[in-house]
Amino acid sequence: MRRILIIDDEDDIREVASLSLEATAGWQVAAASSGAQGIELAKTYQPDAILMDVMMPGVDGPTTFRKMQQTPEIAHIPVLLLTAKVQGVDKRRFADLGVAAVLFKPFDPLTLAEQIIEALHWNLRPPSPTRSAASTPSAPK
Figure 1 (cartoon, helix red, strand yellow):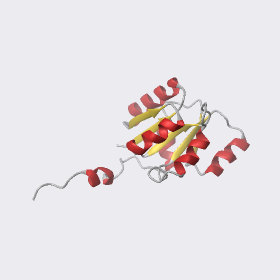
Figure 2 (cartoon, rainbow, N blue to C red):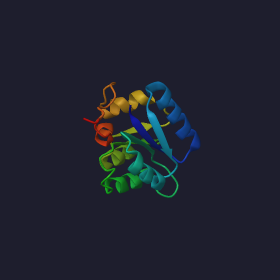
Figure 3 (cartoon, rainbow, N blue to C red):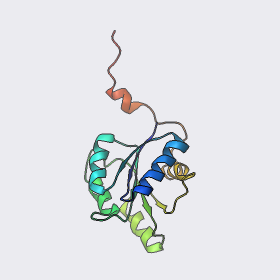
Figure 4 (tube, helix red, strand yellow):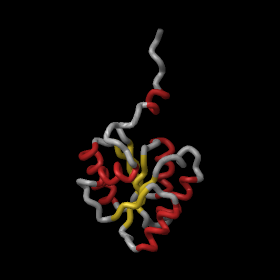
């Protein structure tokens, strides 16, 4: 089962995205309301991907992404930015950051999971259980 972390300062966006991904894809979703909270949660939750708002008070999405890239335990996690800005200059700026993809608000809750799957080139099967196998003790002999 895929695990997604949503980082957005808007309660409504976090709730709609969470419900959407849980209902349409069966994914486990965790949510944070700020970049700092998201970084800390990502370290313990170890999601398969992070969906993060660009415009947040205090530390914005691009700055949070750069901090994530400097944090070894989460630097490998793909980040998708969520933004209402759709101008070409913004798209280029976000792409230059090295994020996995940029998704646009308002998003369609019925197709959000499909957009993430397509952006990350995931197949529809769940990921291999390497994470859980590594933490599960072997059966007694």
